[in-house]
Every structure is written in C-alpha cells, then in structure tokens.
Length: 490
Ligand SMILES: CC(=O)N[C@H]1[C@@H](OP(=O)(O)OP(=O)(O)OC[C@H]2O[C@@H](n3ccc(=O)[nH]c3=O)[C@H](O)[C@@H]2O)O[C@H](CO)[C@@H](O)[C@@H]1O[C@H](C)C(=O)N[C@@H](C)C(=O)N[C@H](CCC(=O)O)C(=O)O
Ligand SMILES: Nc1ncnc2c1ncn2[C@@H]1O[C@H](COP(=O)(O)OP(=O)(O)OP(=O)(O)O)[C@@H](O)[C@H]1O
Ligand SMILES: N[C@H](CCC[C@H](N)C(=O)O)C(=O)O
Ligand SMILES: [Mg+2]
Image (cartoon, rainbow, N blue to C red; front, side, top):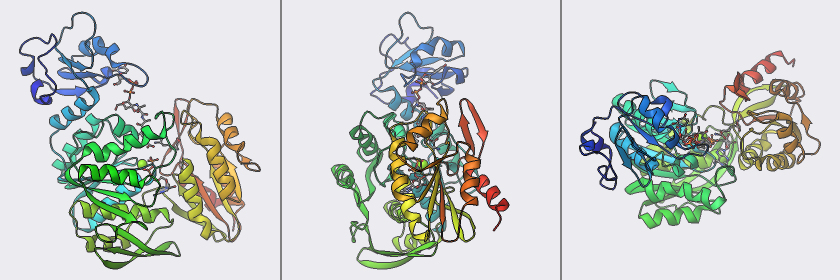
C-alpha cells in the first residue's frame, strides 16, 4: 500500500522535511516495536509508559523500515521519510484500519469495569443462535465459529486487532463482539473499528495504577460513545448504577439510539428487568421491551449475569437483531470460561472458579454465591503483583465482610514479593488463613468443605499460568480444583 493511502488529510505526509515523492512509497507492513520491524515496514515511534519508541528509530531503520511516523522528528538527518503526526496512536489505528481493510459487517463493543468478557461471549452466543457467523475478541482471546486463539491483551493493539478483523471477515465472520478495555480506549487501540453498537456495564475501582483518577478512567470508557460508535449507532447502557446517567448523557450528546437495560431500563426502547428469582443454578426473569413482557430462564448463577445478559441482548437488538429472537436465545446462554464456573462438589458443597480480581467483582461473586451456602461461604483468593496495590486491602475487607472462611493465597505475584501482597490483603481480613501455594490453598479449602458450604476460588478464572517473576508456571484453578475434588474423600 502507498504511504499516502495510510493517512487521512489531517496527516500531511509531505510536510516537515519528508523527501518529495515519499507519499508514493510502498509500505509492506506496520510496526510499533523496532524488534518486530520487517523490511518495507512503516515504523510508528510511540511514546509509551516505560520508554519512548523514538529511541528505537535507528534500530527500526536498520531492520528495514522504509519510513517512520511519530509526534516529533528525531534530531539529525533521517535516512528515510518521517511522517509527523499530532496523535500518533490514533493515526496508527486508522492506518491499520486502512491497511487491513476488511471488517465483519456488524461489530459491537462493550466496556465497563466488570462483565466485558461475559457480555462479549453472550453477544456471540445470541448471534450464533440467530444464525450468524459470530466471533468475539477479548480477555479470553479470539473465538470464532471455527477456532479459538488466546491473546495476551483484552483489547489487542491496533495492528493485531485490524489484522484479526481482516482475517475473520475473510473467513466469513459477519458479526463480532469486542471488549473495549479502558487501556485500549485510552490508547486509541479501537479507533478505526466500525462499531455499530456500544455497551456499558458498570464502573468500580480498577486500574488505578494506570489512570490518575476515577474521572480519567470513566472518560476513557466514555470514548466508546463519544468517539467510536458510528453515527446513527446504538448505545446499550446498564441503567442501575451511579455512573449510568453520565454514560447516558454522553450517548445522548452523540444522538445515538439509546437502549437502557436493567431495573431502571426503559421498558419501551430499552429492556426493563421486572423481576428475578433464583431457580437452582439458573435464574427466572421477567423482562419488558417495547411494552411486551417476556419470561426468561437464564441458565447462569449470579445476579450480575443478569446485567451482562441484558447488555448482550441490547447489543444484538441495537445492531439490528430481532428482539424476540434475542430474548429467546437468553435461555441457552453459556457462561464465559472461568466466570462463576461450577466445577464440582464435595459432600454436596458446590465449588466455583471465578475471575473476580478486583474489589467490586469479588463482592458481587461472593454475594452471588451466598444463596448457595446454607452453612459457610469459603473463599480462596489473592491479588496480582505489579498491579494496583490499593485494591489489596479493599479485597481483604470485602472477603471479611462477605465470606465466613478465607484463605489468602498467590495470584500472579509477578516481580513482587508474594508474602508482601498477601500481608496487604490479610491486614484487612482478620482471621483469614494464609497459604501461599495456590494448589495447596485450593486442596485445603476443598478438603474442609462440609454439607451446606460453598467455595469460591477467585481471581484467575480462565488463566492457565501463575506468573512468578519472569516465569509463567503452568497453573489452572480448574485443574487444581478437579485434582483436589478427585482426591478428597466424601
Ligand atoms: C501500559 C500499557 O498499556 N502499555 C501498552 C502500550 O505499551 P507502551 O507503548 O506504553 O510500551 P513501552 O514499553 O513504554 O514502549 C514504548 C514504545 O517503544 C517501543 N519499543 C520498545 C522497546 C524496543 O526495543 N523497541 C521499541 O520499538 C514499544 O513497542 C512501544 O511502541 O502499548 C502497547 C501496544 O499497544 C501495548 O502492548 C502495551 O500493553 C502492555 C503490554 C500491557 O501489559 N498492557 C495492559 C496493562 C493492558 O493493556 N491491559 C488492558 C486491560 C485489561 C483489563 O481490563 O483487565 C488490556 O486491554 O489488556
Ligand atoms: N456485571 C457485573 N457486575 C459485577 N461483577 C461482575 C459482572 N460481571 C462479571 N463480574 C465479576 O467480574 C469477573 C470478571 O467478569 P468478566 O470477565 O466478564 O469481566 P471483564 O470486564 O471482562 O473483566 P476483565 O477486565 O478482568 O477482563 C467475574 O468473574 C465476576 O466475578
Ligand atoms: N487483565 C488483568 C487481569 C488480572 C488477573 C489477575 N489474575 C491478576 O493477575 O492480577 C490485569 O492484567 O490486570
Ligand atoms: Mg475481560
């Protein structure tokens, strides 16, 4: 592709010392990491959290970059043309969208502190039931009708993202549900994606190691509605939270089609939850949309899954799906792997694996399981190293308040001292036990289960490794629980 075709008119590529004719240069690929540059690539030098890509321009050119783009030209002469950009991350995403030009024709994206992975999976399930070739991209990777590929980021970087969109569109995927993380939105990773419907679940404390304050965190999420959903698109917003009004205002300001969901959802355009009750490991709901009531049998544990299911149904409707068919599909939803996943029972006490690794999620997961614990509600959890340290005592206090028995263990200590992470949680959870080895913590918890108890193993969900320093040790809560369940007598 020609260099000129990667940029829109607001990126004047012939300016600032670029040699004449640079616009006609053939670009073979895009790169943001000098170590990944291939001959013929355009290298984007991005200022980052840890270092500045401008430091690696020489390395990128040595590796074969035919042009460089960035917000400031480096000192001295460059052997290749330089493209000056006001917002290089956004320009990168838009260039990636031009370079990898195909996208599934219907794309929905969901943001919020908790529930994104679940909503993306549910949206994919509903579309599939409606007969579409549907995929999802997020924390659990890329899932299409034919394959599943694990990815390390919730919202992939723009080059990987647009490459995937182009690839799956080529494979016939017509519908895609995407997770929009606050990092992804803040770093413009999703710009250039044609989002027909945006969803919002909720907002609570997370990522305070990245965002300077909650307002910044919310503003990053609001970019989905302010900047990304296409004109005339839909905004599907859970209406039951303090922050809901701000999200609704942002969507209104854009003139998006508003679909509010939940107990405060609009019973006309939106989806109002009229009533909900637990039915074993499922829930019975009555919802109202367009003045019509529908009974739903949601085959999932956890009140929070109602919010996720309604946002997913709203996204399907907002992207043009038939409401009655979308609601009928809710009776067949499957939870995303590792989200309040029932993995077995000992002496009649159910054991669940869940991905709650932040305060509100832990509270919601424990509250969701309370009805299943006639006797003790037991929780095994830890907190990640090199992540927001402020959430550790909050999670300790939430466990103390919502569980009857607590084992604090390790969850990806990364470069930190695992004992110090545990100590920060334990300080707020008096009486909790400390067992650093996660497999042993799970074994101990399962061995002690008695009839009437319920166990929540929280924090790792679908993960398959324990990150200790630079090493990822194979570890799965599912496997650890299965092993403990099979060896525990009774
Ligand atoms: C803090 C953060 O979000 N960093 C993201 C950011 O990296 P960065 O630009 O800040 O990286 P940097 O290390 O400072 O380097 C600056 C630039 O120099 C370049 N470089 C660096 C070294 C070199 O030798 N050559 C070179 O060219 C880098 O490629 C980069 O372009 O941009 C990169 C490209 O898009 C991302 O891969 C990277 O995600 C890192 C790996 C990450 O761990 N991110 C996590 C925190 C994240 O994004 N999580 C969210 C949320 C998950 C959730 O909600 O739970 C997610 O969407 O996954
Ligand atoms: N709507 C919700 N409200 C509160 N808590 C929720 C909600 N949905 C899920 N959770 C909790 O959050 C955990 C993570 O859920 P999920 O993976 O769907 O969210 P996510 O937003 O993708 O999270 P992450 O940003 O960590 O990928 C669940 O295991 C559960 O404990
Ligand atoms: N995307 C999240 C996942 C956290 C999962 C938890 N197991 C941990 O390691 O803290 C993060 O990287 O912060
Ligand atoms: Mg997720």
